[in-house]
Structures are given as structure tokens and as C-alpha cells.
Image 1 (cartoon, rainbow, N blue to C red):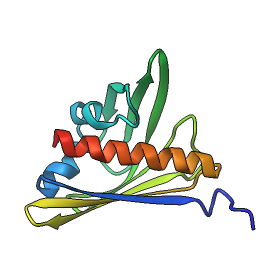
Image 2 (spheres, rainbow, N blue to C red):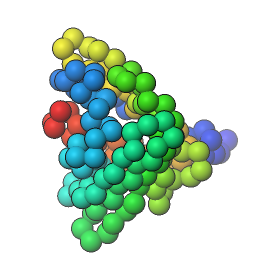
Image 3 (cartoon, rainbow, N blue to C red):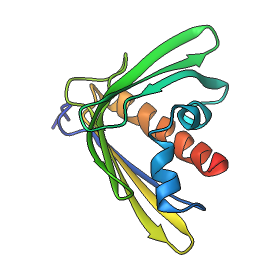
Image 4 (cartoon, one colour):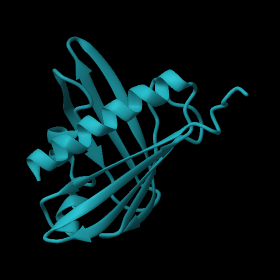
Length: 143
């Protein structure tokens, strides 16, 4: 059976040593996004803009060497500090690609679960899983 883009999803999670409100707010703050949206070694995010309201947009430029990769989306759910849902638009995404972040207090920190649905193919799904894992690791370092 062949997997279609509708079947492909990923979930990654991490516990971060910061309060849920702080971890949640990092996803809406352009300065913080530029610090942790780094999906691979040597990658940076030199530009980020957010309009943090349901229906508002965010836009990022990720750089890998001289290659600039625009990413963006629309906030669908902003339920501080519990859940954040946004569409995911990139050169590698398909219509309906969506990221859901769930934030749950864990001890003195926050357990973050990220679920990303709809990919064009298995390779894209796997690349995004690696990227999101790196991003959550970087978020834990800067929070």
C-alpha cells in the first residue's frame, strides 16, 4: 500500500526547563523565533515577522549558506499556554500542511508535543522530523 500525503504525519516531543507561558510565547516572538528556528547545522533564521492572532500570519526566512528558504503560515488556534496551531507553508510543503503544538506543565518545565500533518512524500516527512527535532532541541537551549 502506498502512503499518500494525507497519511504522512510526524510527532516529536521534548521537555523544556521553562514555564509553559514562556515556551508558548517563544513561538509568537520574532526575536525568539530567529534564535531557535534552526532545523539543521549551520542554518540560521535571519528574519522573522509575526502577527500573533488567530488568522494572523507569520513569515520566516531560513538560511543555509547562501540559500534562503521562505517559510510561513497562518495562526489557526492560539490557546495560551496550552495549544498553538498554524498552517505550514514552505518550498517543501503541500496544501493543508499543519503544525499543532501542545504545551503541558511537567514539573517546573513544559512538555511540548509537536505534530505536523501532510507531506508530499516520505522523504519530506523524514526531513521535517529531523528539522523539528533540532528546532525543539534549540528551543530548549535558548528558553
